[in-house]
Length: 276
Image (cartoon, rainbow, N blue to C red; front, side, top):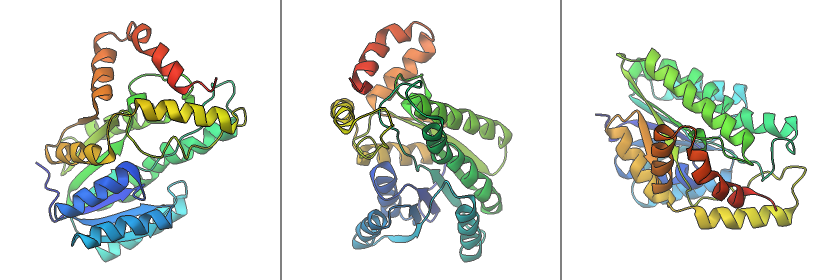
């Protein structure tokens, strides 16, 4: 069992959504939270909520696409909190507005990969020595789109499959050590990730707004509920933390019907994310 209480709970992407709710939830359970994000105003709101409830939190403005910023952050944490038991939640992520792979530019694809995949890799590389020093738990956020290839989400699915594979490797390499490893697979969660998605060059604001409304209708899980499931999964040392009924269904379908599942779910996915 991994105890949230008295841990050093490091979470990226903590200015809103799942990261914010999990930071608040971890602090409520007695963790000292180190919250980071590129959004300083959102971080301040997270910190205010935690402190109003009597929790303990530090915030850092951090761009996970910057290797230099991550290295400096890890050095700071190592100096300020030597030998502490760490839970690292790599949650920061972005989305790209609706469009097929043919419509996406390589620059757009690379931009998303730098944050959603390389951000996780860089954070893990920088903090793994700290996790070894004090023991702890590495938690990487993939997605339901890391369970199946979602049309109109080529870059996002590629990154989330990458996070899934990367975390599986680490789980096997670190088996028997003092570090537990979990992968989180959220389904549709009511966050602003779709609304704040970067518009692809082939997508108009009107098309993006239409796709965003469809996503909002399909999102069934609140960030607060997602946080409860993630924290519970961490405490239980679950290798896979499935968040939301839609994610549970997709996890089941893709394992039971690894080819035929597409006939059942892809028409709905195309409708939800198509810019038409």
